[in-house]
Length: 269
Image (cartoon, rainbow, N blue to C red; front, side, top):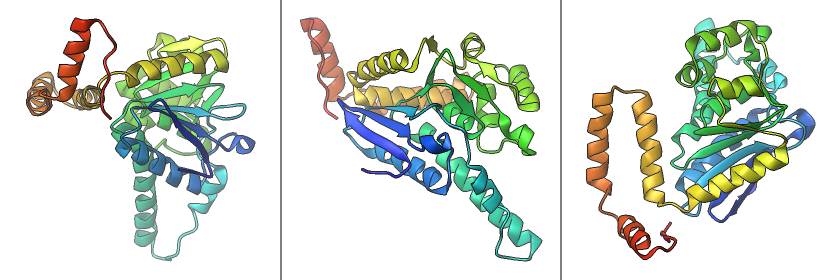
């Protein structure tokens, strides 16, 4: 598939998706939001894809929503206040769904962040399964400085990843959280000296995941996501239902055979 706002390729079952508006600091205009959902829905259903890596072209990862798009959001067709607000809500729900496409993707999504991750960029990486970054990376919930409440997922997902007190500080002040702090608080898994070394490590991680059973990886992502939003008892119940439905696969036979024969396992898509 070809996109105007993203680079996209698939190599060895790893889909590499890159924000591709470097001249605009990878800020996201309407076409980019639309394409982002298309990319991750495609990755979710494409059997050739087993893992997705998200990065950014140019000097930074993502500057968030394009300011010009924010200005356009004030122009409504109707003079009726209720209809204006209804139109706004429909548009906002659509943007939320665009970001949620990373989380809803059946395949693991790894965010590889260099330099700035601003506003909507934080919404997006909060929806990924894993995050890695460079030493020069920083994260900022910039909406507060633009007179907005962050409304596309940051305030809903970030407290599931780091402490609520730290989320509150970042959201109230808009300050930049540097890479070392992001690692200490658990937002990112690892910090690398530069983008080149980060991408090499991230791709190796992606290839390791892609070599596992696709059915098992999809089930593991689903269980981790379900557990985040449910009690232990509810999650254990869902786990029993899931494995009762999926455990008897060709993959378990192949995995066991490969283990006993001390050879790499090979799985169908």
